[in-house]
Image 1 (cartoon, rainbow, N blue to C red):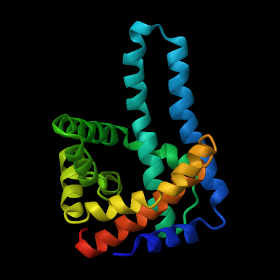
Image 2: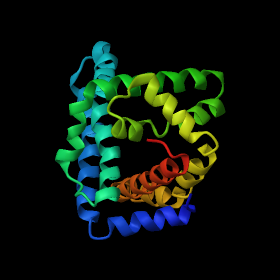
Image 3: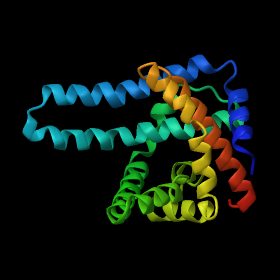
Image 4: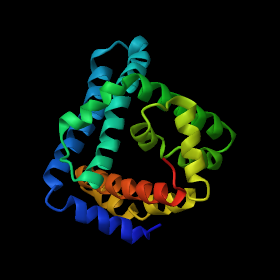
Amino acid sequence: MDSNQGYKNRALADLEGNWTDAAIVTLVLLLVLEVGGGSISFIMPPLIEKGTHFVWFLLCIPLGWGYTVMFLDFIRYSEKLTLSKMFSGYKEWSRTITTYLLMYIYIFLWTLLLIIPGIIKAYSYALTPYILKDNPELSNNAAIEESMQMMDGHKWKLFWLHLSFIGWLILSLLTLGIGLIFLQPYMRAAESHFYEDLKREKQVY
């Protein structure tokens, strides 16, 4: 496994010359998630607003998955970051929605015990999106359990990788969130490299 700085350097090398494409797809994702949700709150009566938000959340899951795994092909094959690739997540809408929903339920139930167990479980399940991408035959519990096995002994490593971006996150907040369109691709590319290294170390599929 590489160091945090090693993953970040590899991500930066991949993104060199591709920042514009990365920023565009990230901006579209954020607009769909935030502006779309906000519009629903504005036009819907309060009594049905909560249910509509839940439906919107479900509909956005394949989009978020498509965004995440798009970076896997990007770092593997230097494939361009495009809106069509991000929206291709809807081709797998059934697998992604059911698996993510189950994963979120598990995390919620663990969080009811204490916050720390919920965070630990969230990191246990962190590789589920990539496993869904690489294993079309897996879904739901099978994909989640595969992530748990791969992350055994490596949850702290991924936590520290994410934490190493805290300075960039603060800077993004100081720019009223504009920096997020660059921070998100940076983090996703670094995380994709983490997954690739761990997959080789574990010698899975």
